[in-house]
Length: 189
Image 1 (spheres, rainbow, N blue to C red):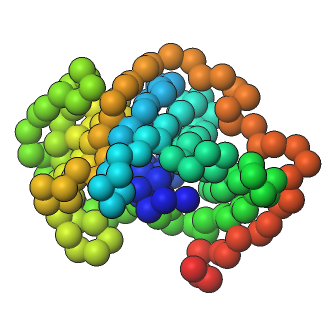
Image 2: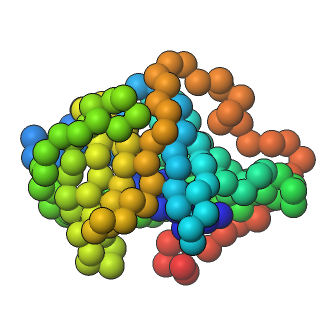
Image 3: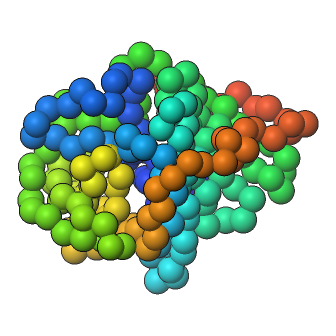
């Protein structure tokens, strides 16, 4: 899975706490309603697309990487992450311990930097420090959809298409008959 795919998924990761609970000076970081977002990212000069599906009721996120047949499913309530490789017919599963999932704001300070519009959808630019201590700006809708992420002047990913509406439940089902591999725990990574 590409770094951009993981960055997208982890930057949107959140706990099973009520989505409406947030400070007035911080964005929602997971969508409050079903959405399908197609992103574009630049990997070494090559433009790639990846897709995110969010099921608000069950709090499932599916991220389809630019690599065909490779996708990730995050179950927020159960704190489980599955990486599915269709070519290898395998599923790697990891479980997060208590506390914030990777990419959660737990203790992160956000600064509102203005408003913009990405893929025809209004959003607010929020600045925070990333895990390497670098300032990162994410343009996030009022209902928790990240539309763009930037580090400095570099766009890490940007929404090309945003479609709100019910998502097909089949998108969030793990395939039957695949080899299951237990991935490293949070303290083993």
